[in-house]
Length: 104
Image 1 (tube, rainbow, N blue to C red):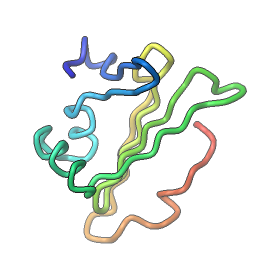
Image 2 (image 1 turned 120 degrees about the horizontal axis):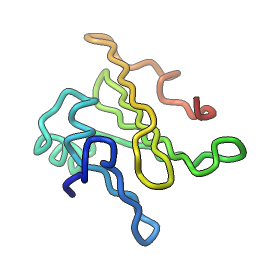
Image 3 (image 1 turned 135 degrees about the vertical axis):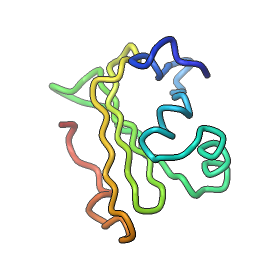
């Protein structure tokens, strides 16, 4: 999928969410072809959360790879509202970085 622009890199279609590998790669410090390969291998895992109440209409997409976590919050149109990366360097990603919580 090619994004329409940097802010619209997520698409919703038939109940599925598609995100450009370049966006994930930027957050995980990987080239897009590597992102696709690592996802197929199961080395990149993900979590999708749908906002409720005051966060209704937002989704948080979280991607994990080694010691990095990339979170992307998008609105119902697929516009990126917020994006962050957590990198623990040589240390493993702590369990607390993999838990669900309310959307910020």
